[in-house]
Image 1 (cartoon, rainbow, N blue to C red):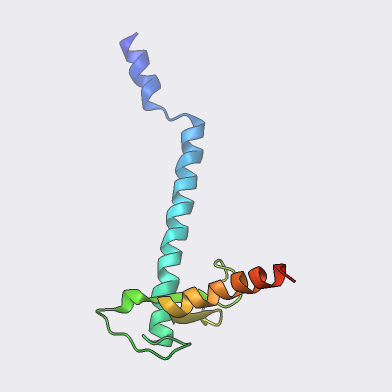
Image 2 (spheres, rainbow, N blue to C red; image 1 turned 180 degrees about the horizontal axis):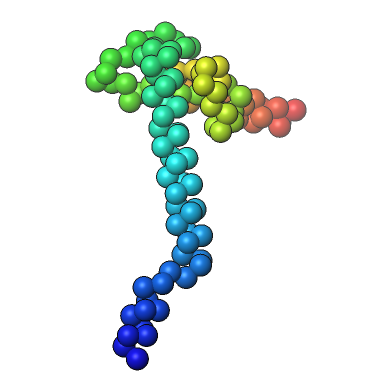
Length: 107
């Protein structure tokens, strides 16, 4: 009986294999996400495309990558969908539509 239990516990149920596959996909996607940031910073430099503030290695964490078309999965090799924006300009970019919608609702 003990042998049979050990043999059964050594086998992975099929749903665990599916979970492992899903985890691998998530890890790959997370790695790709990190890679596009580094590629954008390397390609476009440590400068904000909007306000032209320059960044050093010490404060590069304040520089973000904005997807021009809004699609975070659209990461072409040539970097044409990216622009490096400082956190302030990036917040401004994403809040513009919110303010416009808010003010147009009152009309």
